[in-house]
Image 1: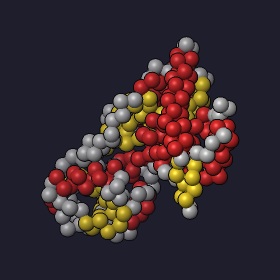
Image 2: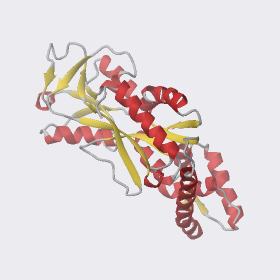
Image 3: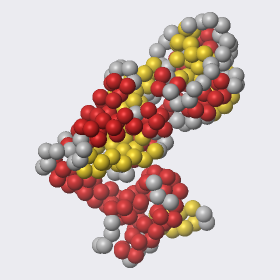
Image 4: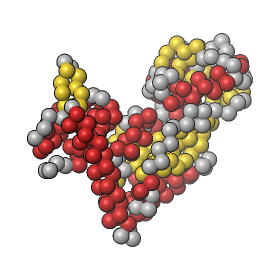
Amino acid sequence: MDWTSAQLRSLVELTRRGTITAVAESLGYTPGGVSQQIAALEKATGMELLRRTGRRVELTDAGMTLARHAERILTTEAEAVEALERTRNDASGTLLVGLFTTAAAEILPPALRKAREDHPGLAVRSRDMDVDEVYDAVASGAVDLAIGLDYPDVPIPRDPALRVTRLHRERFSLAVPTGSMGRREAVSMAQTRDLKWILPSAESYYGRAVRTAFRRAGVEPEVLHEVTDTAATLALVEAGVGVSTVTDLMLRLRPSRFDVVRLRETIERHIVVVFRCAAERRPTVVALVDVLRAVTRSGLGGRA
């Protein structure tokens, strides 16, 4: 069959995400580009792979069958590329990295500078994506590796095919409107019972992790505003709308005027790098992971 990896990956992602739009966002294409990939795949196979029902699409039996085999084809292809790269001793080649907004702003620039200095043959491309999507992106082969977040209170599911390596550990504090807590340097979770909150959706790992930690302390956060964007959350705290949890890395996103109060209990998040186990000896992957470790250790306070 005359098909391409990009076409097969679009089909596999459709089984994971359910809509053309979601596939486009995941792979960095336009919806029209994804539709063209699927159409080309139908032409190559001579079979209908999608069935359109109103505004939605669903895979036909042939589409589901090909998608199952496509996952194995893509895995085998990735393993072949990784095996070939291991025959070289130098870290030369191109890696596509998935990462979330804070990592793109604070980790990627120094990492790119160090990679250019230490490994001039290594080319790095990046794709900004929702932090909860990076694990699936690595698993599907949409990116070579990704910088993500893991929460001890709500750990990400561990796929045996993926390696999750911690780069940095940071502790949450409380961001509160200026003067609203007097001169307190620290509060317990119990003392936040009457506060109004700004938090991400409970469907997100971050939102679930914060709620889980506070519920363990007997507190149910009253969330007035569900906000995913960190900069928007900080702006709302600054405006006196409510309180939120915050880390040192999050505080770097925008200059803000509010008070930061330490939580006596520990709530943490871990910045992690995710890659396929089969790639852990690829010279390019090893080199970039080492660069990310060095950058986070020196630039984010050294807490591994």
